[in-house]
Image 1 (cartoon, one colour):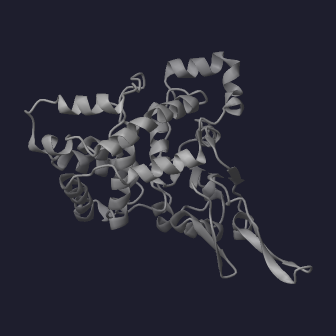
Image 2 (cartoon, rainbow, N blue to C red):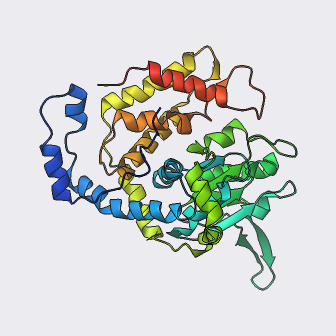
Length: 361
């Protein structure tokens, strides 16, 4: 099967709004009814806005790839999470660049970056903050914790206790935290990039299904190809490149891109396609838990963000298909799976369902 995001070598070619409209108008009249409906040019203002951010997205991808080589597909998954306003769980074996990838994304954005190294003895107040009595003002004052940033690297999140893990639930779902009955809004944009090792469970606490459901995507990295790994070994500057990265976009630009995601066109046929995929997971004999309505919503948002990354103001079935496993793989439970066990069987079932459900054409 080809790469989920196409070839890493294919460039993001700049287009003017006029070129885009002309290209859409030049499409032949022949083709499926779905293609005629979906590929029709959306509102010109939305298309122009998508094309205006495309060079910034290309620059962001290039900046991250200066620190981690040969992972174009994974980098795009990360940007889907960023543009969707969701959170990303980076899950893979030690030494493949999980923390490097998260740091590279954080350093590429001119936002407040916080790294939290989770340990078994960490308390919720170590993450959220604490209220301290001020004798001068004779009142309690809230001192914010490291969670009050734009990009939060939650390193080895499964090494902390369920009590501390649960402290992140409100922050990841509501973009706010409550301490001593008072709610405190988190800054925008806000994204949690969490890492965990999927094969070593000694001294760890498996993430609950509720916690996993807060992550928009679960992203593996995998080993680099031979040429990329050779370059890593031969070029000593690769070890220092992460510290030399400079921001290429700022917080306001990120928020603008996130607002643009909701304007990406999703036809009714695609909505029905997503619903059918979810329905199949709920009926599959190998799954004990299928995709929830929240999972359907997350898949739609992710597909809209992916369309923007590809320079389109409309979604296609391919946007949905490419994101089925990253978005839904951690939201289903296969029958007989022990807590903390591998989710490879669930991914295989989702892949099977993805191939069986007719694509709207």
